[in-house]
Length: 164
Image 1: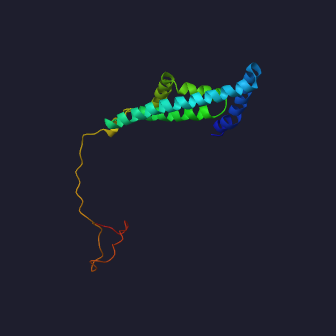
Image 2: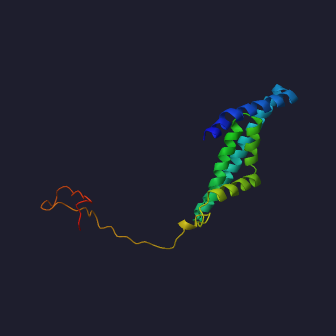
């Protein structure tokens, strides 16, 4: 876990800073900063558009009684893409924008679902679909009472003394 956190909080910002300096040397500081802002705004617009689409597919899957695996993974990837677009930096913006492109997101989604799937269980929640009905009847409180006290407190059941 430490190497992942080290990459995330130390290496990634240093790489982002290096790329920003290189782009600023090539096109100038002000245009580079303006480009970062424009990429973030474009990413936010795409996040809203793709998020609405994923939400519509999620509702559709729930309406027909399917397990909404793909729309949920898409939603998570869109949230990740939005976070990457908000973080200042050309690399994070680039990765975030790539995740907002539906064919790229589909590839990532398929890899994630294949990696997280339980063997023998349908990816779309086949284990949750069942036509079996279990009919139960509620009989009320069936807690045993102490002998001689009909309204008294319930008897404590001790597994060590229960020989019945």
